[in-house]
Length: 214
Image 1 (cartoon, rainbow, N blue to C red):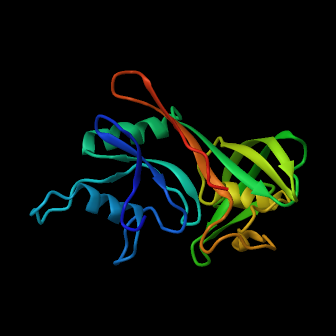
Image 2 (cartoon, helix red, strand yellow):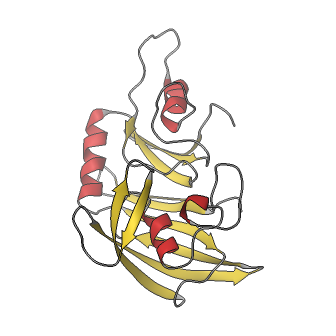
């Protein structure tokens, strides 16, 4: 719903939301974004000051799914460290029109961020400016002209899943930027962050999961 966010978990210093496809994560200009919607949700009546909303990680504009936001600076620092220390587990669901090699596998490439064209270029070998990018995949089901995969990115690179699946010959359905021959919905591709697990301040683990609407 416009200008609102679906809250999946409200915790101590953080909130986990369902990011809708079609909007960016971070605010810029006067565009509709996750950050702008969070400001509106948590704005105190009559207060001219924007509430604190910490962007811990991002999902691409055409991607939907689980996203955690920090509600204060200390939680932001803690969650940033958890991501840096690889204490966070992220799983995605993706649909392709072409199968990946094998029902279970690992993709390993070197990615370069192309800022001018807002995309990632993929290379099989190391080169200057390229970052090693690795993900694991597992076929969940197939039928009606599509293949559904669960994806676990081991690294967290710009457009990593989109670029690596396309490089393997299986672009995500609707992802015209990376070679999909068919469209999905406007500003949306069939990639969804369906499960996120991260440590909480008490030493436990917060795990949130939501399935896509496709």
